[in-house]
Image (cartoon, rainbow, N blue to C red; front, side, top):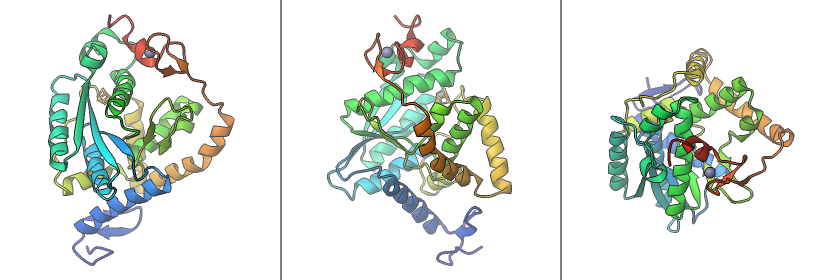
Length: 304
Ligand code: SF4
Ligand code: ZN
């Protein structure tokens, strides 16, 4: 198999575009695609201080590598990696170590925050005391807050997360299956709070399929955490992931089609879904849609 661009030995066939790529062309192509996504959605400015959420997994480390390359071309831009240690025994310590090592290699400032220090409890202890929701639901709520706190402490003005194409399409379908119209409208590559209470969030990898972020990390020699989190949800998202992968294999390009369809209907949804009013949490003062924010609700009765 020859590379469709340079005639070199191809290592990867991309069914959704009907092309084959050699290692060099594949890496260049992924990086260029991310640059195009950044420019299409106007994600970055020349003087941004970007907080990059780095978990130690393949997606976030690959994104950090690419953003670092981009940042080097803009002398006024700055990067800070933010890693959250949720307190998951036998899992998170290794990821934090790998994230730290890679940040050192790239020369990127690295901030680590732990649930224990921020909220007074580890996820392991929390999930033993709280059983109403899944561990991932609690983890997601606290991690979002932790990343926001980390970004603010670093004085960043934006947050980049490593959601890839598969994550985005799964979330859209998950929201449809849950009948959650408000959330469907909010799954987008750039999230801006017009009232400026939350930092802007960008997803530079949202047009890269998961398979390709993994291959990018592998080909660039990134050491990432490969064992899954012990709490990884086996519920609906997994079924959706498997369903999408099956359809994608039979009908290449389906994930992109769902992503593009979402792009087209999002604007209509935004008009028909009333915008959410934010108030301040009566416990911690952070912005929320209810009287008490999700973080305080999660910790209530569990942490003094
Ligand atoms: Fe948290 Fe769930 Fe991810 Fe584990 S799999 S780190 S519990 S969100
Ligand atoms: Zn609160």
